[in-house]
Amino acid sequence: TGFYVNKERYWEHVASNERYTYLFVHSKRGVAAHEKPMSFLPDFKNWAIHDCWTSYFLFNLCQHAVCGAHLLRELNALIEQGRKWAKKFHAFMLDLYQRSQKGQNCIPQKQRAQVLSTYKALLQQADKEEPPPISKPRGKPKKTKGRNLLDRLRKHQQAVLAFAFQSIVPFTNNQAERDIRPTKTKMKVSGCFRTMDGAQIYAR
Image: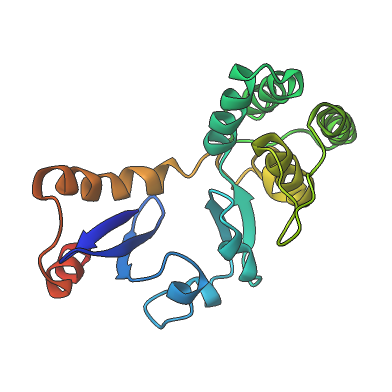
């Protein structure tokens, strides 16, 4: 989450499980912050559940899972725009959530082929429904938010379905969201940190 230290933008990074929470402060949000010794992500070798931020996928010693709650929010926004595929994919994700006992168990092996088939069919519908990228004289072609989400769902299929296929993987990264919320409350009260030392002490 972002905040200000003496009028300059900084980021507080969080990693947590049911026992421990680790916070650190850095001037960068992406990969530059995690290349420093203060981050243990480069050497992490278990499951990392996150919001599909591109930088996280650059660290390949760990296994990645995408937070289902973040996906549902994006799908809801597309549903409000009338995207039929998003409504079906939203229902598909919630069905897997219930069938995996709210992410605490996993889908039986014999049912996984059908899950993958449905996943592929929904992406094909999305591909037909979402406008194609619009070429520009410079830079990358412009895409709709729905097209960008489709591309991520296609690229990170294994990470999206990890909660349903791996009993150890939860449906959301809600643990980390809760652990970083006090910082947002402090920002509402104080507005910013006056010094970097103060921000680091707070994280500690």
